[in-house]
Amino acid sequence: MGKIRRIGVFTSGGDSPGMNAAIRAVVRTGLHHGLEVMGIMRGYQGMIEDDIIPLPTSAVSNIVQRGGTILKSARSKEFMTAEGRQKAYNNLQKNKIDAVVAIGGDGTFKGALEFTNQYQDIQMIGLPGTIDNDLYGTDFCIGYDTAINTAMEAIDKIRDTAASHDRLFFVEVMGRDAGFIALRSGLGGGAEAVLVPEYETDIDALIAKLDKGKHGKKTSSIVVVAEGDDAGGAFEIAALVKQKLDYYDIKITVLGHVQRGGNPTCMDRVLASRLGAAAVKALLEGQNRVMAGVIHKDVVFTPFEKAVKHHVEMNMDLLNLVDILSHS
Ligand code: F6P
Image 1: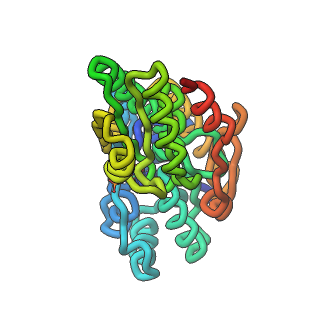
Image 2: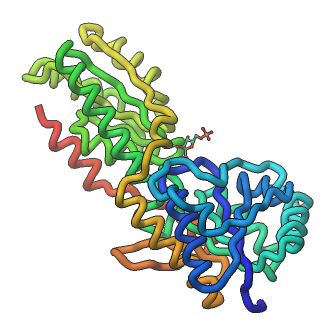
C-alpha cells in the first residue's frame, strides 16, 4: 500500500449520537497530518453513486454537539453484491481516496469485510457507532451512553405518572438483537424487571413477581422490555400479564427512535473524538481491516472478523442486580 494522501469517511446503518463528533475528529486529525479528507454521503450507497464531497475544516465546525450525522446514513442492499462493491471501488479510485474510515455497527463492518476481501489496495478502519452497544472489541460504542440516558430520563418521567395513578408500565426500548439499552436504562431507572433477547423470558416468574409486588408495598411498577425480546414486544408481554393479573391498570410506552437522536453526552463526544483521531493515526501507521475501540480506558484495534463474529456477553451481575434492587 502506498503513501496515504487522501482519506474518506462515512457513516452507515442506524445513526447514533456522537457520529458527528467522530467525523469532526477524523477530519481535523487528518488535516493535522497534512491529509485531504472527503465525506462519502449515505454510507455505502453514496460510495456506489459517487456522492462524495470535500470536507474542509469549516465543514465540521459547530457539529461536535449535534445528534444525527451530517454525512447522512443508509443501509445499502446494492453493496451486498460484488457488482455494487465494484462500482464503489471505482468511485473511490476516481476520487483518489487511499483509505477510508467507516463509522457504524455490525452491518457496516460486514460490508467492510467483504469490500476489503475483494480489494486489497484501499485501507479501511472502523469506528463503532451504534446505540445498541453490541460490537465485540470495545466496552462502549459511540451513541450508547446518550441512548441509555435518553431512555432512563423517559423512564423517570413515566415513573412520576405511574406512581400518581398506581399503574404498571411496560416500557419498550430499542435493541432488535441486543438488550444492553434495556439493561442499563432499566437498572438506572429502578425497573422491577428487565427483559432482554439474550435470556429466555420466564413470563410466569414475571407475573409472580408483579403479583407479589402488588400485594406487598408496591403501588406502581415499571418493566423495561427490549424490542427484540424472545417473548415479544411490550404489547405482547403486557397482554400476557393482563390475562393473569387483571386487577393491574397497565399502560405501554414504546420509546422508539427518540433514543437515536439528541445531543450526544460528554462521554459519547469524548469517545468519538478519541476514536476518530486514533483511526486516522492507525491508518497512517499502516493498520487495516480493524475496528478501533476502547477497552479498560485504552484504545485497542480488533480485526473486522472478530468484531462482527464474536458475541458480546451480557453482564449477568447487572441483570441480577435489577432483581435484587427491586425487592418488594
Ligand atoms: O441502531 C440500532 C437500532 O436502533 C436497533 O436497535 C433497531 O432495531 C434498529 O436500529 C431500527 O433501525 P431502523 O429504524 O433504521 O430500521
